[in-house]
Image (tube, rainbow, N blue to C red; front, side, top):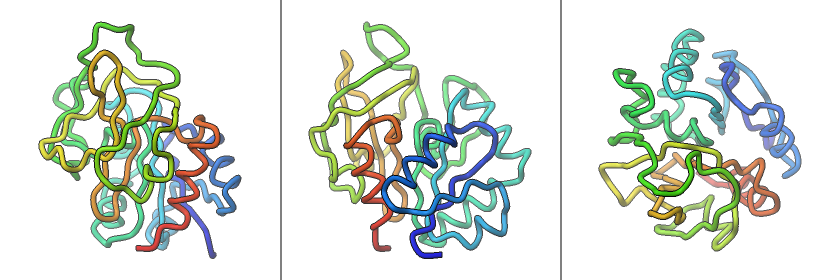
Amino acid sequence: MKNEIVIIDYGMGNLHSVSKAVEAVGAVPVVTADKAVIAAAEKIILPGVGAFGDCMKNLQATDLVPELIRHIESGKGFLGICLGMQLLFESSEESPGVAGLGIFKGCVKKLPTQYKIPHMGWNKLRLKTASPITDAAEGSYVYFVHSFHAEPEDSAIITAVCDYGTEITAAVGRDNIQALQFHPEKSGEAGLKMLQAFKEWKL
């Protein structure tokens, strides 16, 4: 179906609000764990709420890891949100010994800040490199809830940062993969602009 965006349901996502936000930008949200539906999708969103280890455990239990890897390797559109971004990396200090998807080299580390953790609330995006998603909301305030952030081996994949007593990785991207540490579905007009950009992204 035209403008269909598949939202991965593995029991750890903010599914209702992500689905409503996708719907608000004129796309058709399909919330599913069905591997056949995921395999046929042109664009998918991987949300995530909770702990890194629990999310990986649920993805493995639902046998969705190979499907996600195939989707990414095929060059189709992928958007990770919050833990859905962190899972793209090799590991996380939150869950020692648990391997991530390993799409990007690097580790997810506890926020190195003197400020209160978790980093919760609105913060301003500062763009680092061009992105078909975050370019739509340059200088906007977006909504964060997290205690860990990604530290990629290749800093060139960092598309946006924010300041929280230190520079925090707010978004990453390469080729057909884009991912956001913040919640676009909770970020008002700026978040909708980014989801709109994902819907319209030509791959």
